Length: 246
Image (cartoon, rainbow, N blue to C red; front, side):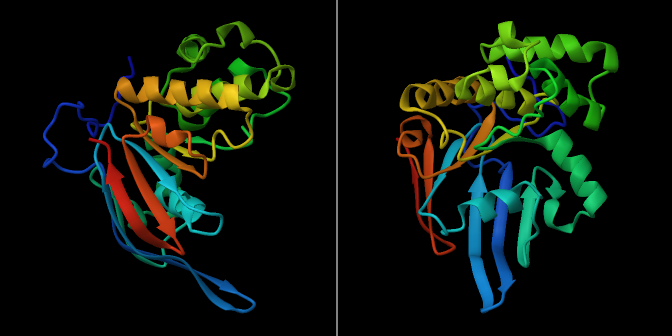
């Protein structure tokens, strides 16, 4: 089972009227381009509870990746507020953001972004080295435990190039979980995978969510909607639909 530190994790059976884990209030993101200002996000208001599995969907250019980057603290909003637990993410300094992100957010990308010269276990351990939450003597065993959890412990001492795309994405998910974050953010995590492998990765997300992890997936793949408990649709930087199952 996933155990989440920092006191911002809630069990799935808590009342829906309790404090939200994530809240975006009037978030605007405008990029300056040679042809003038480009509004990527336009007044986003969104609340996400602990334990939700949310799919952020929309066409290319709708603002999905900008949304994810701002939520992760990789990018900053032009205007508006972002709170995760009790942390006002929008007001953190760069150094504070880096520390907060390392402890609070697990990131999964479309193209895995594993370091090719490190073994799979070493890639997972590297995430622990950067943050320093896990004591050094425990990092190898934790990496192996996470790789076992995602079903590729037998690949621990191989280099990424020797693994299939699905195995590399599972390794990337293990790395994202390395520091026991309460939130997993994934940007098109199945976009580079075949149909069978895509299903296996989504089933892994579903399992992690059932164990209590809050998951937000940015995607244009329809498959995610079968597993997600909520779908938020972005069009031209606006939320046009927000639907929960049940």
